[in-house]
Image (cartoon, rainbow, N blue to C red; front, top):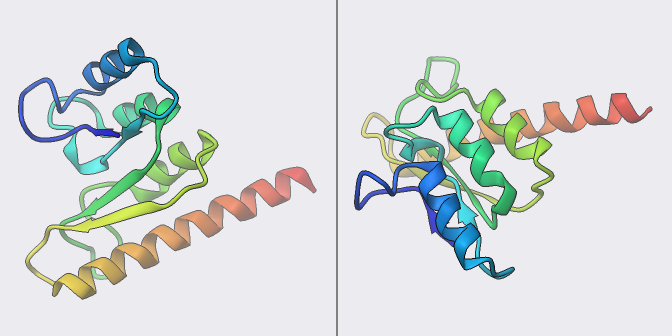
Amino acid sequence: VIENGWGSDYAFKADFVMDILDEINLPNCGTLPDIGNFQYDDPYIGVEKMMRLAKSVSAKSIDFTPSGRNKFWDYDRFMTIVYESGYRGYVGIEYEGCKKSPLEGVLLTKASLIKERNKLAQKAEKRSA
């Protein structure tokens, strides 16, 4: 898997990662879109582009609102993109903040992701009923 990430100005860009994988064109190669690593791209557009070949997904957190929502990324929008792509695998969590303990940051992120996933599953269930 190739994650959009650190290393060069190009590695942050979804189009660059997808060009590499389209050139490789092997079924065992894919992406790991990280919502927090789109330095130059809109993170939601970047995730959407990379989901076509996603083998894994990463949700990053740095800080939270008092109600426990992610301050920097809209997880509702993020998880909608992930869910609507057809991806049903794991979503990894990276907590890179300093205002919470690492465990608390991961647990807050997990709770937020589960909440969004459940909302999306309920919407899908209502559409199929």
